[in-house]
Amino acid sequence: MALSFGTDGVRGIAHSELTTKFVQIFGRAAAEEFQSCSWLVGRDTRESSLPLAKFLANGLASTGGEVFDLGVVPTPLVAAASKIEEMPAVMVSASHNIWSDNGLKIFGPGGLKLSDGSQKSIEQRIKNLLETEPNEISEQQATPYLEPEADYLRSTVSSLEGRDLQGQRIVIDCANGAASHIAPKVLLALKADLVVINAEPNGRNINAGCGSNQPLMLQEKVLETKATLGLALDGDADRLIAVSGNGAVIDGDQMLCLFATDFARRDLLQSQAVVVTVMSNMGLIRAMAQNNIRVEQTSVGDRNVLAAMNEQGIELGGEQSGHIIFGKHSTTGDGILSGVLLADLMKRWGGDTVAIAASAMKQHPQVLINVPVAGLSIDVENVFAQEIINATNTLKGTGRVLVRASGTEPILRVMVEAETEQTARSVATALAHDIENHVIGSLPKPGH
Image 1 (cartoon, rainbow, N blue to C red):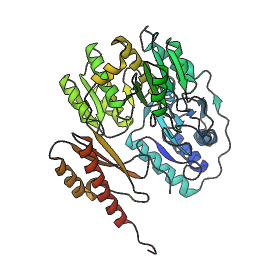
Image 2 (cartoon, rainbow, N blue to C red):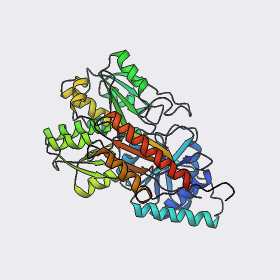
Image 3 (cartoon, helix red, strand yellow):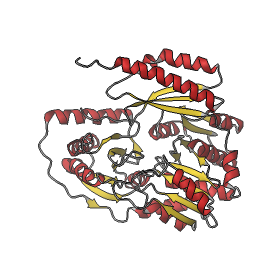
């Protein structure tokens, strides 16, 4: 069965689910969809990324177009190059997933992720191509894109409008991923006192015990070096999680709260609004209300955040996971840019990152439990309606419950937010147990 688009592109186990044949056909389907003569391709540091990128290029070039190879670069750089060149682009990456996974993130001309309609059209083309078993596509040689980092580095540095980060000791965790080379360059160009960790990729250590999903190593290094701030990227650098001077984690909600407040103070938030997702903490929404900033909520995924920003003319949006989109600067989540702007904010506000991070918002305890649902397609809202109602009633109006299917993994995410950690964990555990029992009862019996 062909892979389909999830929250952020197509993703699967490299070579067993995301096969070279599928990737090549994906490229051909995308080329047919856009009827474009030129494509950009970037990749992360997984050992599967280079061979998959080569087969992708074969497919993209199969209709006669030229393919430009950006090499190992972050996803936001691919999006930026797509905007500059007005070419569609594909990033070979599974983002924050483990090394054995891989994926494809596709951008239309202008650096925008695809609409639902375009994704469905490409999926149908892939299905048709797989069914017709096309002949082998001849191998194509991608053209190297000269100095792919130059424009991105220049634009990221210029986002501070002449200011720099001198005096800021910053630890950057590159997750042994796509930003291992360029992220330190950006921060050094801004005169930061820089400490770099996890910037030695070997094909299998991407996101391994490091990066935005596992910031413990960063927290320890910030304390050890008495740093002002720590910045943790994920494998393709489209998200950021930060660490304040006392080792406390600053998540995407807290960063978004700080940015929105700062933008409003500097008259850079003309819409007086931000876009967040359904996973955002209630504390963020209340903090925005206190600052007279409207909150628009959308489904999970920075693609959905950007769509809402564009539709409503909102300059800023993001996710708790660390995808932050600055409409003035980017068309996708950009962890390096977010880190630069956060460090600048901290310096302008006085440099005490502990106090600044603590002032952002009062976070409500939020517990997230994953329930495996491999092999099942579930209409969450209808199938688990009663379980969700029961859990919500237990909170008696002091919290909220959210159950959703992951867009990147075969799991259901059960999230409960409450006034206390104990209540949130108790309700989430009970709800996850009820859902797990329901799922087990839905599985086919052996021999059937």
